[in-house]
Length: 295
Image (tube, rainbow, N blue to C red; front, side, top):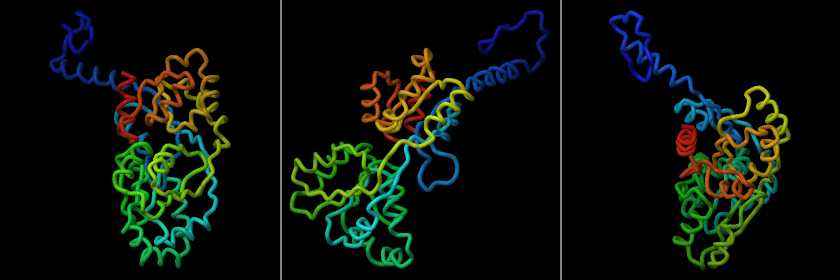
């Protein structure tokens, strides 16, 4: 007798509850095919509990490890604070990264400033449009007491189209706090269509000082991962050479994943075969794509 894809020795006397035993054995063999995924990203901002990407992959039977790729230095916070507390000078706000929202939060650490923000300033901003890319950034914006628009856009390209649909050229400049490594898609789209923009660099991005050491330790202890996920073009730039060196001949067996089309383009430009790109930049969408690629 056979069942559930297992060959049964005909000399074995079958116990009365054999089908359920076989089913349990079979289920156990399936769940033991746990593959290791390496996530090249920073821990989520201001969250407690497990990282959502690790959690979503675990729910699909895969173990994930997170290695931070980037380090950030905040700059121009005095200028940022001045602009935040003069909302009448701008037509709205744009946030395309959690880090830019973190810079705003740092400007509100002073009790007096925070009180002023909560009593008056945030409502003046909420009378205008607060544009964001992605759910993670939107959640942080909400923590500031602001009401975000565009969290489902997913990319700066799609967000710029939303802004152009909603705004015209005679508005006050939209205020865009951003990082040193930003794509020019959004500023270019707004400029070409005559929508005024006030850009301020509020953080500088660099390679994480322990990145190479952490990657070496990981590959030594865990071996070559079944899948590696990149979360930004900067991540591709800073990690790829080390990943190639550590993977050696096994590089072609790795399923490479991207958080979205911009990162996927950066990977393809470096000659990587992208096994999956998340439909939306969320933990659920990326984990679904990786799990499918690993089947």
